Image (tube, rainbow over all chains, first blue to last red; front, side, top):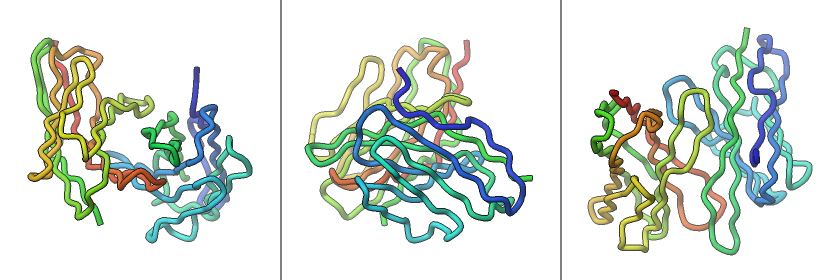
Amino acid sequence: DAMVIQNPRYQVTQFGKPVTLSCSQTLNHNVMYWYQQKSSQAPKLLFHYYDKDFNNEADTPDNFQSRRPNTSFCFLDIRSPGLGDAAMYLCATSRTGTGYTEAFFGQGTRLTVV
Amino acid sequence: AQTVTQSQPEMSVQEAETVTLSCTYDTSESDYYLFWYKQPPSRQMILVIRQEAYKQQNATENRFSVNFQKAAKSFSLKISDSQLGDAAMYFCAYKSGGGADGLTFGKGTHLIIQP
């Protein structure tokens, strides 16, 4: 029944070593989002894809990039992780165009930087 | 830019009692959505309830209901007959219109259910 799946659930990476987080969906939603949630804070939108169109939030660091090779998959690439990038990363999807569906979230990937 | 404020970092309620979580928001837009999401520990965020700004009637979902005061920009969540499974972080969220914009979240309220 899993609809938005994030892998891995837990990721440990070394300071400065590139890391990729993945998200897949079975909902056929046209929008996919990446949020960063630091401990005891609200999730913060990093960017989203509307179909193939990439939309970056103004304050998202250049260190973060994303790819969406097809409707089902979206990746978050962190080029040079710093200690401040340790957080939970949430993927979400929604559908828009003929009405709006609410966002469905994955279980998140908790990133640790050592 | 829109902002969402949750002024209660933590709330506690006895099982079977009713609790209300507060949320205010600031926007100049007329077309928007408001949501309450629940995030249990180490589990995914799930939608509790949604409200379209153009709808005057308050949304309800079983034991969950909202008090949407558009002029006051207030959107509180009432949980009736609280259950142990309701224990979680609750986030109030705002979304502009029906497009692809993401959610703006409040800082969350940690709800504790006392048995």
